[in-house]
Each structure stands twice: as structure tokens, then as C-alpha cells.
Length: 321
Image (cartoon, rainbow, N blue to C red; front, side, top):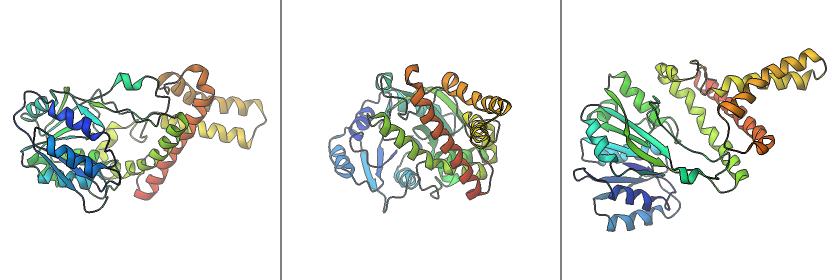
């Protein structure tokens, strides 16, 4: 089951991957067009006419986000096992067989998501990637399966998440809270696209825009306090966030009180952990000679990320930094 929006060019590859599934009983695919503005509708119509398996094409009444599209899709499906992936993914030929086999013993199964190493080459520091190589506890819908009875029990996706962020986490944690049997199945594999414009500056701008949707992270934590066990020290959404906050304080010291050796030492001590993290622990893929440009741009993005957490904390009245 796939909810798609404005990815007409990716759909033929996705459908080809579904046609290549091996060792699985007959299945149907449901793809829901969330009122795309590109050629998605025409592309789906053409694909449905020539696929070797039943492909049902549906459309949401209005563009309203993947939660609405996925609900429409799984409810229209007839099978007792529901497999979810995304329109920018390519399932492995054994994906569906292994996923359905794992669902015989579990209510929810999350598989492994890798990035195509060929696509990674030379994409620049700000291309967006999705890789899930161990249990994340976030129930990402790029590669996950649910028993239909579980989806019916918890009511499907919460459609109050209007943007593609958090709706899959919320669904999974509601399953946890009713006692669902969970399984991590690394042999259930999909390959995720690398999202890049081909221009590093444009990639950075798109990354900055993408950060805004993380405002719903605070809503996820408010609805599911147990989710804090998956976060960094329970109160930080990402490991770089406390380091970013410290660096912001350090820069504030320099800006307000630029003179004095002790102030510079204090500021340097606050900034250094972020520099170490982003240059050594979790660096952007860039050559070291480009760090004088990449690191400041990364810091702006990280600071914006923390700012979005603060906005979400205020909006949803729960602390998440």
C-alpha cells in the first residue's frame, strides 16, 4: 500500500519492483494519489493497464497528507496483511514474501531500509537520505507491515497529522500501547532513493524547508510519553540538539561580551562539542577542504531544527528540545 504525491517519475520503478516480487502468493497493490499536481494520475492509469498483478488506483478528495491516503488505501484493500512502502522506494524481490512470513508471528513488522550506494556517490552534503539499519522504534512507513486486525483495532492513521511527519510514529506507538507483538526483520529490505536536486545550494535550501515539518515531533511525544525512551536523553529529539544549544549560548557570549580571555574560553568550550560532533561523530558527507562552508551551513540548519522543537514545545505544550 502506497500513498503518493507528485512523484510520477518514481512510480514506474516502484511498480516494476512490485512486479519482481518472488515466492509470494497473489497479492494486490493499492496506490492512492493524494491529489498530485504533476502527471501522477496519468502515470498510475497507464501502469494499472499493464501490470501483471491487480493494481488499484484511488484518489483522496483533497490533498491532505499521507495519513489520509494510507487510511483510504488499507481500508480498500482486501487482504488480512497490509504492507506499506513509499513512492521513493524499491522493495527487494523477496520483500513481500519475507514480510508476510514475519507477520504470521507478529502484529507489526518493521524491515530494513538502505540507501543505494550508487546514488550516494557525489550527491553533496545536504542531500536527504533515509536509512533504517536497526530497530528505531519509530515505525517508519517506508518499510513496515501490519496485521489488518491491528489497524482496525487502533483505528488506522491519525489524520490530524497533515504533513508527512509523525503519522507513522503515532500509529506504531498506539499499537504498542494496546499490546501489539512487534518484530524487527532486517531481511525484509527496501532501497530508499536519495533526494537531491543536483545542486548543493538548492539541496541546503530544501533541507531547511524540510526541517519545518518536525514541529509535529512534540505532538508525537505528547501523545506517547513512552516515545521519550527512543530519544536522546529523553528530552532531545536528536543527539546534536544539546550540543547545538550549547553552541548557541557560546556564540551569544561572543556577540554580547566579545572582550575578555575567560569569556572566549567559555564560549569555545560551549562551541567545541558541536564542532566535534559535526566534524567527527556525525559529519555531513563533504571533503574537509569544504568544511569552512559546510559547517556554518550545517550549524544554521541545526539551529533551525532546535528552533522548530521550541515552537512545537510551545504549540503542543510539551517540552522537546
